[in-house]
Image 1 (cartoon, rainbow, N blue to C red):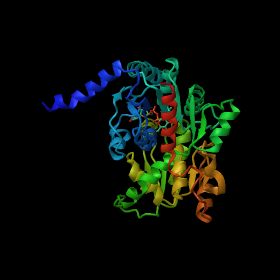
Image 2 (tube, rainbow, N blue to C red; image 1 turned 30 degrees about the vertical axis):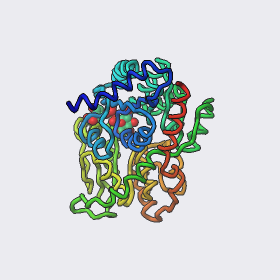
Image 3 (spheres, rainbow, N blue to C red; image 1 turned 135 degrees about the vertical axis):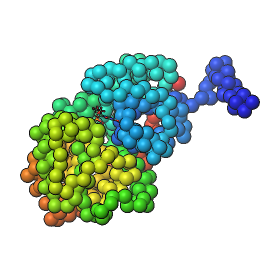
Image 4 (cartoon, rainbow, N blue to C red; image 1 turned 90 degrees about the vertical axis):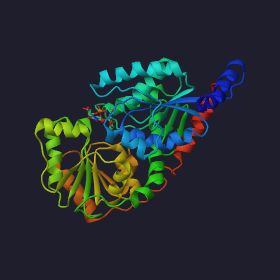
Length: 383
Ligand code: UD1
């Protein structure tokens, strides 16, 4: 009985749409995500989009372990995916191909007014390519970032996605300039960074959490992560990184990405010294751990930015960064994977703690609202 009452207005709405030349239904956007950092970025965005648009949330299934995926959906109060493609892992081509095929079917069925992709993962590229092949407009959140290193799968994904997009939503002026250099000027907007929105929203809650690391006090440790293909697939490089972390004079918390855990096991590598291995951490815990760390050592793009926003010095375990703004004033230092360079960078931030003002560089914490307005306007223009 209850079911009948609930479904009637929806049926009436559908009937009305089929006979009416004007549509009371809000425009539909399909958002495509699949990997851990994308869930964080989508959380503020999805909330803003759903205020005026119908969002169909598609999870490609690139990340599938509970702590890499579901834990983020529940902690960030993300709506459950409307479609889960369950593609899982594999070589880049096979993974992207499976996504492309499954996404095409979803896009044909939903006929959205716009497809929204985020960041630089294989899920980003698959979403943009599937949409472009069907003639659907694409909005790219985090457009214009470049490491200028085409050996990185993420750099390939970023470039191709930007060149397939109609709405290019850049977090910084650097992004706008990078696009202009590649001849992309139309549809480009500087909107701020959705990760700054997420930090603004969730930091107070993260700080209220009880301290969860036994035997190590806040402020008495380094926080490290490594997961990039270039760092973990080569046993020598990964071994060098472990030696560098093992030589640090304070305890180092090292939450392990599944890729890194697999490589450590495959190469028979183990950290020594004061390194504590942890499982992948939930978002709020990670924010808290970054906020209280002496320094963050990472190859993650998102963590470079989060450390910057939280006022924690960062040492980037790569040769390049897309987040060049964080390098100013020594807030972030590039140290690659060489143990001596890493030791020097740690000594530098411990010797004279860098100071910087994290406000404004990545926006005012309202990027998601700006993005939602631009997407809504573009989607309505298509009707
Ligand atoms: C991907 C993104 C990277 C992003 C990172 C965040 C690409 C090219 N790379 O890299 O930009 O910074 O996500 O985490 O899209 N695995 C599991 N369980 C999972 C997920 C992955 O065991 O839930 C394993 C896979 O089996 C695979 C490895 O981890 O062997 C790598 O996963 P993959 O999604 O290919 O790339 P990431 O390294 O996570």
